[in-house]
Image: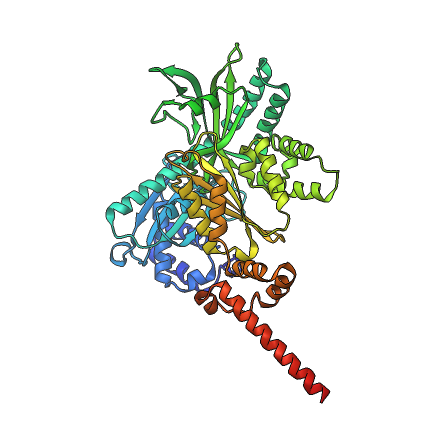
Length: 557
């Protein structure tokens, strides 16, 4: 149960507050007590009762002292191992203390960074305190929760306890990494509105000149940019590039001072030469490029950044550069029907029209369900022809319990998206990991991300994304890989069914399989092949026949 407003006068919190009044000067104690009560206000009771009042007092006062002075627009970070003699309180964990302007994504991003650095998190306290500071940043007052205090500013106070780190160098690195993440959060938050405004400016630019692109495509691109700006995309970075040739190599050069958010400042490599395949994609006469960046987001969610490129065209209709957004699609973008999202709605209409099923027929409804539940990130990236092939392939499976592999390559050759169907009775952690290892090896991947889609179907769909730091391996035979997946996910009962079919034919085999599918325990399956089980089934059937004859004879007499 959480310690809420009604519980603030609990014996434990009161004892800690009394210690504040006893130990601090009168001019400080009232404000510190108010800070302490807000500090522990929403902490689960079970996390408090296990700690001594002295340690609760020490932790809160230590954070209070850190918050005593702070310049607006800066973050204060402290990382240490509390020791009673040195700090007046103790903990078996390493403590990270933060005082910062309250910002979206801050706590998510900090805890994400702690996990990325390999530190298990034991406790996070995160009150948002409204404070008053003087011109020098000194704390001069706290507003009560819910009070009308227009002169107060909201500050995030974060106390995180992680696995104990004794190495002083590692403690310093941890602090630097937390400070870096807070700076990245601030950059993204401060530049969110300018980035959103860039979408509006780009829409106007698309209207301002004729383009060598299908007008319907231009209209849909503008609708997509508007959709992004309507809380469908978390803008985290933006930069503009010129397409040019330097040193005999074609590539993209970052335009000075165009960066916003995570892409502020000058990149480490201002000019990036493009390999032939990437260059061909860069000059293609289309408005948008939708893919994934090759780095994970340091802000909000630990996933690969979504990359949205808007091509710029010169008066001659040739591509001259690119305006690039990086960020994350919001939860609303994943929950909204694909038939309501610009670009995706066109793909859905095209696939349904090409399939040609009667309206409201079973096949059309099944195809719509496949498209709506298709991994949304891949749906943005895949072209219509590929999508049609994958969707019809899944539809053709129906409820047949077959392992199938559908592959989509990133045009920039950085990752491969694999959709694998696995019969529900064969789906388990071991098989999921086996499949991931085979795909990673086959495509030359460095690591694998995966997600699962389950439903009432007899098939489970697993979406694997194989990230390839050195580029995707050359030509790969998808059917050969699929055959390997079939073998490694094959169950002992599959061999039993096939052997019965071979020996007895479909009708008799079906009856015996349904009867004996679950008759053999794991120890038997581990020691004997399925063909041995068929022999044992024959013996069992013979014995059962003998018993039936004896029962009939006994009934006659």
